[in-house]
Amino acid sequence: MPVLAINSKDGQDLVIASNKKVVVAITSPDLAQCNDVGKTIEKLSEMYRDIVFVSADYGEFAPRVGGAANCMVPWVIMYKEGNMIDEWNFPKETTLADKVEAFATD
Image (cartoon, rainbow, N blue to C red; front, side, top):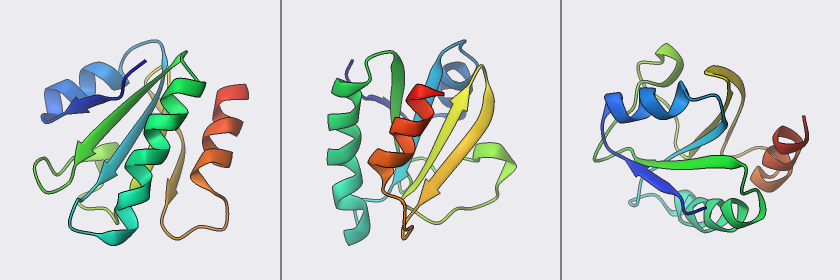
């Protein structure tokens, strides 16, 4: 399934509220550490087709995910049935791929 790009709070809320597992990746194209996240999310979306993968450009649409007023990007949030289950941001010892794999198998 291709990665969905969102650019509004309504779009974000609609996807998160679905009864599916959702991974939201918030990145900024101006930051070097965000460059690989987009590529990783694309690959993961091919591997885990039952998960909805969403990207949000922090510069274009600064999401307010989980009530946060701001966030450190890249920030990846995992939702199940509309509830935040887990998150990942740079730098973490656990890789994004490992985090999504654990989320996919729970």
